[in-house]
Length: 130
Image 1 (cartoon, rainbow, N blue to C red):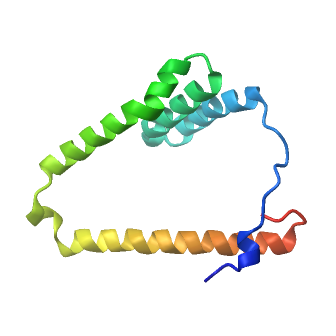
Image 2: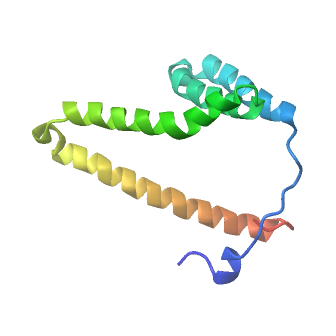
């Protein structure tokens, strides 16, 4: 209800092509900045950066393909099993936990709506529609 049919048909144009050097330097610089500014988040973003670097470098193509397809499914299953095995219903089904889940759903909706409204605002201000 926030967008019209003509807005949904807008095709973005790519402003410029991103060079291979930029694609490789991005995860390295990002990880250094995160490690300096937010050291607690470094392991999580480090794995993101490592995967991005593997894909963009092209040196470890088979390993990158395995990580993107088979390994991620196996890790997701084991993570779900390990968290689910430790989860007890009487600890989980509490008003506080359900409230946190509800807040997450509300935040997701507000974030999505805000993104759509921001795109509308940018369409009014810029010559290239997004």
